[in-house]
View 1 (cartoon, rainbow, N blue to C red):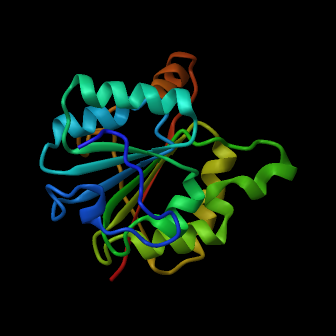
View 2 (view 1 turned 90 degrees about the vertical axis):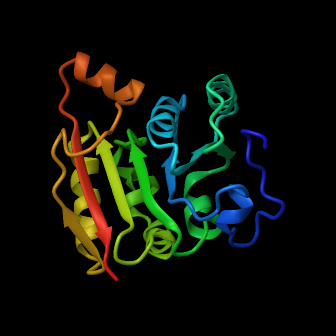
Length: 199
């Protein structure tokens, strides 16, 4: 099985078995905008019982992630080269994602660009509601941008189906991305939030 996942059809909802044919029943986690894949690699190594699909648009980053997966021989990790919002809204399996991780997203800091923030897009939130497992599926966000963080909290608060959860630093295994490490070294504060989709 190739580390690169290329759907046969980009215009219909996938099934878990299409992404991970050998372990379709394993919990599925999504690393959205995965960057260089450090988080995906660490999670896949730590949780061999779970499947991890990384999503990234940029070719150079995708190639790095492929090399990581191949180097560590991770059958439970794959990468999809595609735009994040489309992937969530139209492609990912319905009611099948146990966790979606959005780590260090582009904050689009200029006011005229705020509409590009994923957390401000109704289609993204609709997709998130569609793909998460009802009653247990989680959306986890980390950012160094306070305004983006508040936008996310406000957007999710407007949807009664999302329940905020506590998230302490040592609650569970959660490796840092390269961006997060850089931000912490430069003295920035990392904001994190976690929500569960109610049944």
